Amino acid sequence: MPITPPRRYLDNAATSWPKPEPVLAAWEHAAREVGAAAGRGTYRSALEAGAIRDRARFAAARLLGGVDPARVALPAGCTLALNMAIHGLVRPGDHVITTAADHNAVLRPLHALARRGITELTILPCDGTGRVDPAAVAAAWRPATRLVCCTHASNVTGTAQDVAAIAAVAHARGGLLLVDAAQTLGVVPLDVVTLGADVVAAPAHKWLHGMGGVAILWARGGVEPEPIVQGGTGAASEALDMPAVFVERMEAGVHDLPPLAALVAAAAWLEERGIATVGAACRDLARDCAARLESLAGVRVFAGDAAPIVSFTVEGYDPADVAAILEQAAGVEVRSGLHCAARVHEGLGTTAGGTVRASFGPFNGPEDVVAVVDVVASIRG
Image (cartoon, rainbow, N blue to C red; front, side, top):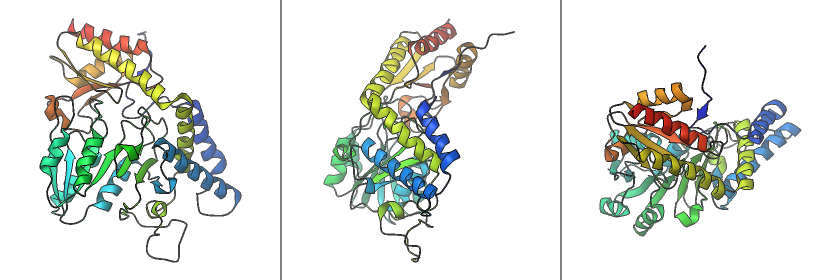
């Protein structure tokens, strides 16, 4: 019988795994013992559900740098959160600037608006590391420009954008900045106010080590997206208009309670260890992996300074084949392809098949780096 190699999970940039035990316990408790909908009753379990939702909101506010919890909505996912921000802020005739480093969760809703003739769109190119020059934002600005969208860090290279400089450009011209923090919140300490963002979205299931089914959407005071989903909120039920209160207006429908409970536990788990400490350990593994891969002939490496991501290509091999060999030979689970971010590959020169992407979480170790490098070295012969 062939020996099955140990499982080495290195796709944390897509969804973190394994989840911390307190996260799993909180999720299970909410599913098994609470069960009720938050804000939909005054009986005991409904009140407990409401308390879990409120604790999740306060935890998210802390993770964002201590913002006002009343400005933190909890949509059902980050793609939904980004769509809520984009469709809720952009008006007919507006011009929007985004970047080639952005994820399809940003690019596709913006493209849909432009394709329908509602808005105009400029996508700024990035360099060979996935970075966009803030001066390009200024050069692309038009009188009709209302919104700039940018990822905080590329999900392909891990490279951080100079968000503060981009924010300064936008604000000096009266525009707004939407930041996708999917690849930083949980591995980089964030203060969204100091960062200069007007709106921030991030998922719970990536570097926060929570579960799918909930995300974070923060908007500073005075930035009021129109709701793109209307429905019951448990408040002001007599009115046909959505409530004026931000979180009620942005949270139509019933919350998925177990992921909210998991978010509370995940935030506590991260805060106990320190986001800076957790992130530094993950980035150390990524840097070590990148350095070792760069020493191999025929291997191109793309690794940034923010998210613990290492993308690479192996000369003469399709990235999908490399990923398959890594799993078969050493149990290494990585992602290959364009990673829902095709435009960034134009700057990297990897449009043909994308890259192999390894992303390191807090449950990885040096042995995972060795496994990746040894297999790639054997491929190169």
